[in-house]
Amino acid sequence: MKKLILIISLLFPMGMMAQSQKPSKEELIKQIEANSRNPEAIQLIQRLNPYDPDYKEMRTYFNKLHKSVRKSTKGKIFEQYLKALENTSVGKKAPGITQFDVSGEPYSLQDLKGKYVLIDFWASWCPPCRRKTLNW
Image (cartoon, one colour):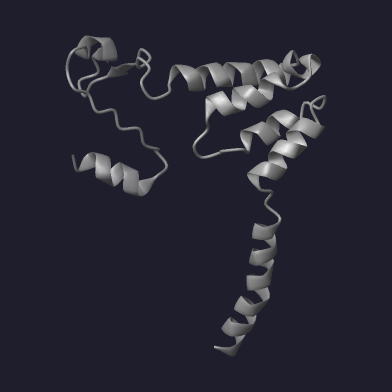
């Protein structure tokens, strides 16, 4: 028990340090603006809202980057990412999806037009996701 308490007491300050080193959104914005000529600023933009990316906000800061950064390979790839985010945002028409049914026949999302559709995306490497899907 003493060893466990010792390990926890040693690891807890490290965890606190790691959390305190994460820059705030305001700090990220300052870094983006200060490094507008550096292609690495694109990665900073991606860190603004990594779990719920806001393409409008990201586009705003991307447009503030120097033209050479926007036209670089990283910039072009990021531009495509922003377009994909915009095209798949809430309220937009869903992109065409074709999938195979259980008998191996293809069907597309467009075949279901006018019907209510639930699309459940899950990861094949996620055991709880697989169990949930099999129990439908």
